Amino acid sequence: MAPGLTALLLTCNEEANLARTLDALAALEPELERVVLIDSGSTDATLNLARKHAPKGAALEVLQRPFDSFARQWNFGLAQVHSPWVMSLDADYQVPPALALEVKRAIAEAPSDLAGFALSFRYCVAGRPLAGTLLPDRVALFRPPCGTYRDDGHSQQLEVQGRIGRLQQPIHHDDRKPLERWLTAQLRYVREERDKLRRCSWRELSTADRLRKHTPLAPMAVALLCLLGRGNLWDGRRGLFYAAQRVYAELLLMLLLLEPAS
Image 1 (tube, helix red, strand yellow):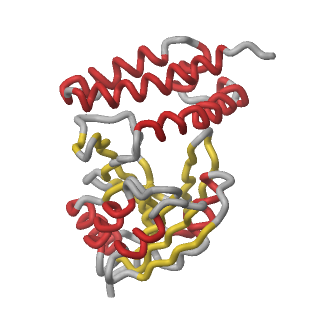
Image 2 (tube, rainbow, N blue to C red):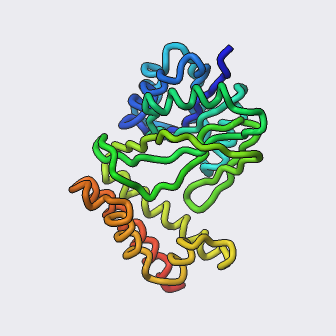
């Protein structure tokens, strides 16, 4: 019998992305048994698209929960998972066929002491992958009892108890929501990042966060890393667009950190 797998997704007004994400999950069948979608109050076509595009061979369960934090949302979703494996996905993550094949092979052959697998990302702009990205690897495939999420600034971290393997095929990050929505979200995100940086001591911060908190060099470093270190300069306008997004976010964070106390 094939090892059971649940796809766990968080959504809120994801009509620009969700259909493609769900369509791609069909490649995970027959191992994919359920799709659990935790929605935090979508007012667009997200829920209709979920019902139309759920993989035919997998049960779809849609649960609504008011959003309070990403970690609590993910942990609520994990509590609904009863299969041996779970794949946690943002609504703009797509599983390419090569990754789906590797996932099915990995869970079938995983030794009992292996708690999960880390995946790398390929960032897409207008549906086309870039040469590189600043997104770190993420453990997105794991045994549900082994994982717990905790909040980390505007995002979340998965804490996994056990040994972590690695998959070779990347997952695609393909967000096609309007730029205006991205810009609106950044102020909330960077405020949460600012609060985290102010709250944490030097010892608790990563090298990148120390650079952000204690120097004005982060925006310049991000520009160089994107354009030259990750090769986005050779991606043309799409690469420049991605680099500009990342630099904008760093500049906004720097501005909030420099803001005088009232």
